[in-house]
Amino acid sequence: MEARQSLDDGGMEGFGGKCLGDALSTCSSYYVVTTRGDDVRIFRSRDSLKQVLGAIEQAEEAALLAFAAGYEVCSSTEAPPWVGVNPDEGFTILEELGVDCDQKQSWLSRKPVRISSSGEVVEHKAFKVKYGDTGCYPGRRPVGLQEAQAEDCEDARGAWFANAARLEAASVDAFLRLREELALHGAGQALQDAALASAQDEVRHAEVTTRIALRFGAVPPVPSVADVPLRSLREVLLDNAVEGCVRETYSALLAHHQALHAEDAEIREAMARIADDETRHAGLSWDIDAWATPNLSTEAQAVLHEARRQAIAVLRAEVAVPLDPELTADAGLPSPDVASALLDSLEQSLWA
Image (cartoon, rainbow, N blue to C red; front, side, top):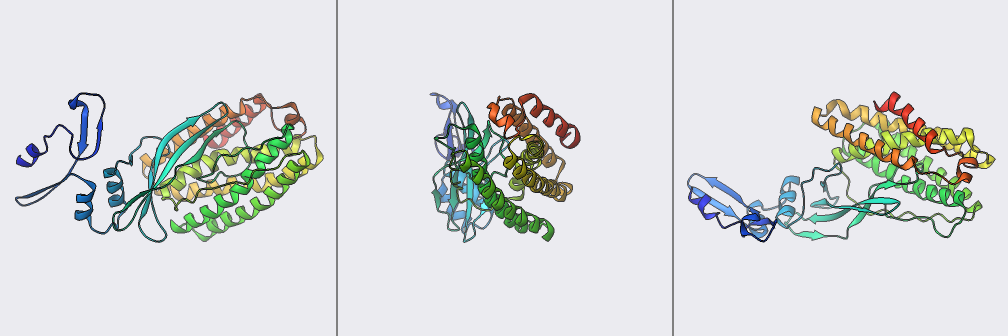
């Protein structure tokens, strides 16, 4: 009781404090209280927590220190903050900052916060994670992919293939990282080898789409990917649900559609080759899902299902945007009505 009374300071002392208004009653803060017999100790600051924790050896300890330093380590969004183990020592938390929207794109911003084994907290420059885009390009978007769009190209075909080439090149990073993360979390060698083979496919895809982009007068932007620690299994599976089971699965079907309907012979032949590879990549995504899902709790499975549902909604908004006539003709991209029908077919056969 005496310990509780000593904490009654109106929420002005402690860590993680916030005020929702001017009144003192709207303020809150946090403490850690330990008891050992009659010995009651109160820890009100990050420095005092460092003393009691000692060496930071657990992810939960790193998260507590980051929270005490004022960083948000709890979130109810589909892409919550997570704690990653650094290759050298310590941990890194990716703090979610919010979504930035403009007319064509939306970006989820994240800030890496590094917690050393000695308890030092260092903030790094925030980066943007791709959340939505009006163009559905083939490839798997890696976490930490920086914003860039093809510029100074009036030809819609050139711009589309330049952006596609950028994403194909970035997908090499995505699959190499996926291979490392699959190994980290105990996936079988077959899944790891399939991720490596997919990265090799993406090298060829980047070369082909770059050649087509240059033919139409566009230079693909060089992809830039932030250096982010390897992710937890939960983060890997969330990303796989969105990027693989939804977006890459649709991209495979889209590539088959282009291979059948593109009036430009070079594009038609290129998309036929890419379609087969993208189908294997989509299959890998579903194989990863099948490997991991049986070991997940009902709640965790529901989270993945909701992530897929939201990703499908984003895709539907993207494909509803009318395209340049040259893209539907020469590149074989579907009209909004046809694209919606393609999504319907996947929703009925795979996503239900």
